[in-house]
Amino acid sequence: MPRAEKGTPRAISNQRKSKGLQRLRWYCQVCKKYCRDENGFKCHVQSEGHVRQMFIVGEIPHRHVAYCSRQFMCEFLQLLPTTQGEKRVNVNHFYASQYIVKKYRIHMNSPRWKTLIEFITPSGHEGICRVENTEKGWFISWIDISPEALKKRDENLKRERLEKGEAD
Image 1 (cartoon, helix red, strand yellow):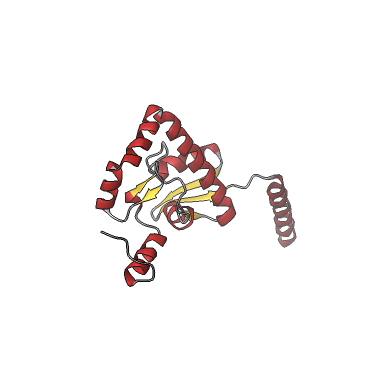
Image 2 (image 1 turned 135 degrees about the vertical axis):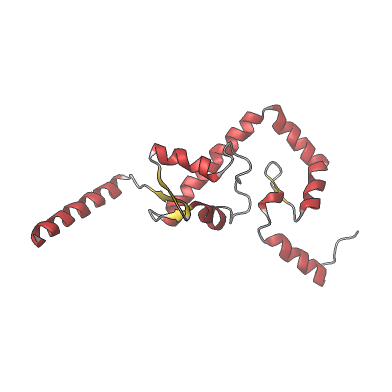
């Protein structure tokens, strides 16, 4: 079937569909390719280019998984403080609305973690960020340990103590 000619309603419709973010279910991280539906993904998986890429990845799979995990962690933990600061945010909402807005970032189907929760809980234990499990879901907030932020916190704490001392 030939391609739609430029400027026709069909070509415009196809262009609009390709611009938006499709479902992650039909995304191939190895080839960095979105497919519109299940049939398109099935055809992509059987294509020669995908098979070739999978053969390359299959030779040393742990290297590919380690690379994707490192990239995901760096990008996620770099985006969190720049967009949210120290505000508390729902992890799933942050991932969906902030992280994967850029189409070709590493998605959760490539790193060694199976879920976002598996990824953020060690970050909470290491003191990189604050992780809370509430009845509304998992929340994450950045812990700023820069010298400027620590100095500012100390000044605020001293000011509060002085105000409390004056109020008594």
